[in-house]
Image (tube, rainbow, N blue to C red; front, side, top):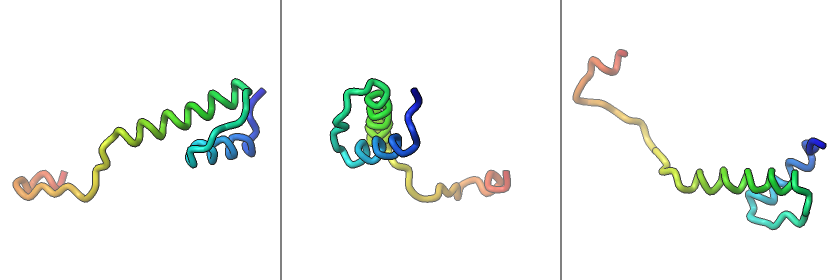
Amino acid sequence: MALSSYRMHRIYLAAIMNYGLGSDDPEELAYYNKIRKEMDDMKKEPVKKGILLNWDNPEDIDK
């Protein structure tokens, strides 16, 4: 049985707030673990900030 959008939202909130799920339903646990894994992967990736400017080659800007 597919999870309702309400239940998915509740699981998402629990995952992003680092709360426990409190359920033994395998479908809910799988969705919770998927969200937690995505969050952990995002923490490992470096954040690229700012705008990259290439002052050495002005002809590359037009491309």
